[in-house]
Length: 255
Image (cartoon, rainbow, N blue to C red; front, side, top):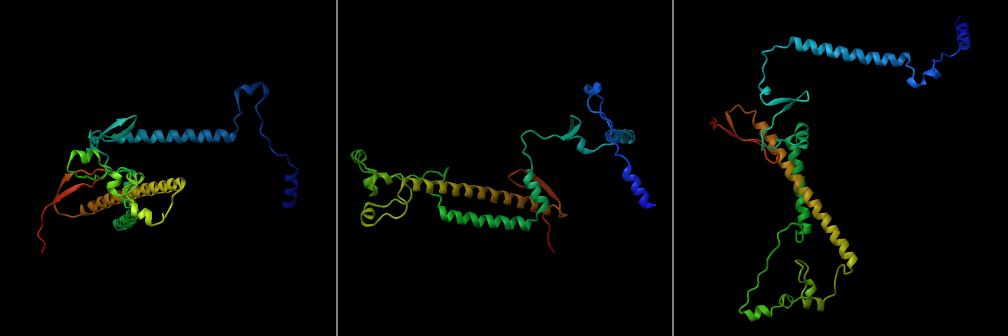
């Protein structure tokens, strides 16, 4: 019996959906059963959602009140919290993500690691020609106005005029005469080294910013943990992006 059914099925023709007639081409694609099914399911889903919202609105208590209603308003159908003028956002998105997922010990470990990298970079670069660094002053005292007029900085520092503007690696004339020049002397190589040095200073600046952010996040996590204490406390200052909130706790004698 099963072989007869298979043979009968093999002789059947495949069903083909009728396409849009030529004289109705201007009306677009002819909707099929599967298209209607998708459209009907979407329509019924929206109707059920609207019915549920109407029921929720009818069952709502008109005297219901939340304190958050005072600090929020409706904009384009969405509740938005009001922000006082002149106040900063308490936390950035990055800070909220780290505080939700990481423990204070992990944050402190990362901050210490960043601090060690910063110290190592500072020891290598010496911060002698960093951008934004305050320029050092070197004052020379002379006895008369004639000495001031005849003053030659290069001869006073015992070096060549080309090296006067340097704040580091400024050899004297005796050193230049008695020893051979070590290191790069070609202009292209010097420019390349200067570019690499600037890149290192940029990395150092980024690491300092990252270490500061980790320090602030650690403070905020610790403050939230301290709030679980049952002692009475008074809020002294609000939380900002760059600092955690400050609380003053009631002194309690420990037995």
